[in-house]
Length: 240
Image 1 (cartoon, one colour):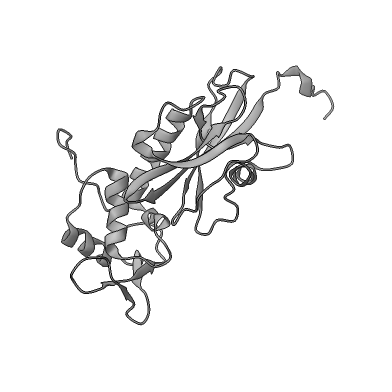
Image 2 (cartoon, rainbow, N blue to C red):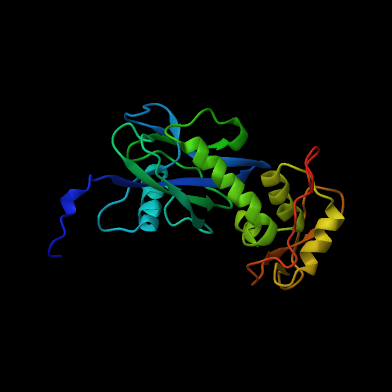
């Protein structure tokens, strides 16, 4: 454009970072990579990288996830933009603005390191050591976002396989919220919410390891929001 000098402003880079969460062995896990180069060589970090000139942030996020962890075309991946992190000095190399994403993945496969990641692992959310850059903050923000959205959306089913029991769905809430729920009350609320879940045709059921009869199987319904919301119980010392 005439009169516009694109060199009048100092250039900066745009990156993407992904906080990918899943449930494994009844515990919340996060997908992390070990950095194979400086800065933060040998530290754990969220998968991510620089946005290329010809791609969108979401395209870059999916590409980096595949390159650094080997998880390409994963079935059931839920990916949503979290927020932008733009504090000066967040990256020692140069001014870097990061578009962060929260992602949920059921039946998560084993990752393997690639690109500039020395290795990739699913690690317990509560057992991670301090992460590189400002990734601790990004991960905490992603956990808060997911926990809040479980109250008023049907996002919990994104943690579940295509067919699941109500007990498995309840475990999602309990794991993410970090609190137990009353089973009959939870079941009543879920089944009373139109479109939240729907039974698998044919009365399909699965043994769950207990002595009772097989548990009925459900799949995600057509609803996207919960009316009324399924509110988490107040913690001790916190008002409702």
